[in-house]
Length: 452
Image (cartoon, rainbow, N blue to C red; front, side):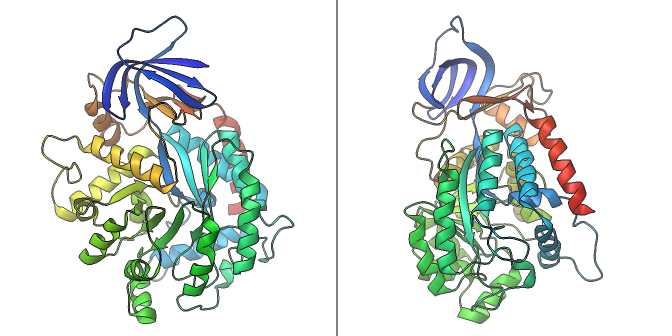
């Protein structure tokens, strides 16, 4: 049992002072506000619940910054993708472990305590399955276990190179599965995470480019009631190709032909019409927004204000992991809306409301829903995922309650996080994860080989 005492903590009911939190077996057993610290309590100033990065491709952390050299033609998502394919084709299982381990260490240091790993690097270099078809999924699980981050594994089904069942690109060969092979992969992935505390699993049909309607219908039951994630409407070209194939836009097609409900998370959904925004919000599904990656890849800007006005739910993900941080994603989300609307505090939700707090609350709830976490936050029964902030940071000095969140997201840059507990284990102290040095060393060795 661990007893923690916080001078101020953000509870589901709002901010409270002098809060004692009791942690037992990785979960919060009791939360008592308004009490003085007792002997044996570990004392901190400001506590927040940890957030989920609901969308991550861990292996891409290894190529962060390697696609910033302009080519002979216009650089787009599609040219970036060719660099990604080359990098993915070179990775060995040990490389995946090393890259994912450092990524998850960095996520924890930056306030993410759970990750939704949209995992599609499945097979050997020639596209043949490993002896254990879930070898790469097991490597993701190993990295999560070593770091302490909570894991929602989302094995991705990828069968085609474009709409209408087109043959896959040669660079996609490590991703490709038949329906039967994917069923075997999903079953083996369940086994790969079976001993990892708090881990769960869903499925991720990659996109309508990569999955035919018949295949989508065949694999959805494999989710077995768990989350279903899919990329949709990320790029204008994707929308145009989907219209040519089906006379429907990607989000429109999904809403008309797939059983989209609260279990689903539509990743990006960047290019949506007003009608799609309203219909999407009504389904109760989550918009999986990855603002830093969407900016990095030149995707565009999701109509977040309109979606929230329609009652939609969103969470944030780190996607390509080119930059990792809770504050980075939430700041970029709001700043994109400011550029789009030429206003300030666009996503605050109303006059006198903290924008940072509104963003944080939405991301907490949306991330939990998208990763099928029934109880989150600083509340009894929830996984003990707790983040404390360093009140000595210049951007937090003299601030309290929502102003602290605003200072962290919009002004702190880095260094604002002090300690992090994930599943009840204190994995970050003084802003540093205990595995940081070793994880960096192994990551650097792997990436030096890969870039060479």
